[in-house]
Image (cartoon, rainbow, N blue to C red; front, side, top):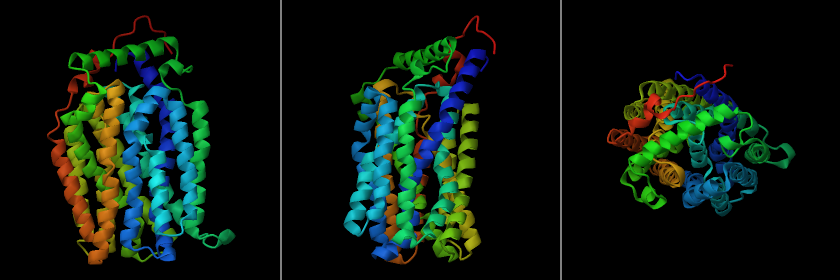
Length: 440
C-alpha cells in the first residue's frame, strides 16, 4: 500500500486491537474445549461413557446455534464494547460453575448454558474487524486474531494438564480445580473490555483526525462498491444461496476442528499411555503447527488476492492427516498425522472468513456472518458426538476420524465452487488517496 497515512493507520489499529482481541479469544477457546482435558479424570469420576461425554462436549454448540444470530444483531445495535463484555462475564461465570457437575444432567445443562452465554462472541469479533480493516488487509488480521485458537492449545494444553495434577487440593478433583481456575480470566477480561474496547474508529482517541478520515473514506468506498453490485438486506443475507454454501463449507471444517480438539487429549492418552501432564505437553504440538499454518496461508492469500484455493488446499491437507491418523500402529506416525491434520484444519479458518466479508456489509454482514458461524458450529456438536459414538461402537477413535476426513474433504471441494468477490481486493480502487498528509 503506497499511502503513508494508510500504512500508519492500519499498523496503529493492528497493534492496538489485535493483541487484545487475541487474548480474549484465547480465553474463549480454552473455556470452550478444556472439557477435553477434564475428561481425562471427570469421565472416570462420574462414570461417563464416550457417548455421554461426546454429547455433553457438543451440546455447547446447540445453545450457541440458537442464540448466535440474535446476539450479533444486538451487538450491531448496542455496540461491541458493552455486548462483548456481557458475553465474556457470563461465560466466565458459567465456565467456572462447571466444577459443580455431578452427573449427566448437570453436565449437559451447564455445557448448553455455556454455549448460550458465548453465542455471538466469535462472529461479533469478525464483524468488528470489518469496522477497522479494508478487505485487502482483512485476512491477515483475521489470521492474527484467530491464531488464538491453536495458541490456546499451545499454552492451554500444558496448563490444563498441570492443573489436573492438583487432584485432591482443597478437597476438589483436579478437573474441578481446572474449571474454576480457567473461568475466572474471562470475567476479569470482560471488565477490561468495558474500559478498553472502542465501538468503532470514531471512538478511537488514539487515531489522529487524518487517520480516521482515511479509514472512513476507505471503508465508505468499499461499501459503495458493494452497493453498486447489489446491497443485501438482513432477510436477503439470511436467504442468500452463497451464504448457505459458505455455511455448508464451514460446517465441514468446524466438525473437524472440534471433533479433533475436544477428543485430542483422550486420543493422545490412548496412543501414548502417558499421564495427564505429559499428554498436555504433547497436545501443544498439533496446535503449534496449526498456528503457523494459519499465518502462512493467510499471508500468502492476502499477497495474491486468492481465497478459494487457499481454503481448499488446507482442507485437503487436513483430509490426508485425518486418514493417516490411526492407519498405523506407530505412536510417532500417529502424532505426526494428527499434527498434519491440525495444520490443515486451522489453516482453512482465517482465509475462509475473507469470503463472506467481501460481499456483505452493515446489518446484513452481522446476520450473514452469524448465520454462517451458527450453522457451521453445529459441526461442533456433530464432530464430538460421532467420534464418541463410533468409539463406543468400534472400540477405536479411527472410524470417527475417517468420517471427519470425509466432511473436511467435501468442504474443500465446495470451497472451489464459491465465486469470490475480488474487486475489493484491488487496494488502489478501494482506498482513496490522502493529500497533504503529515509525516511521522
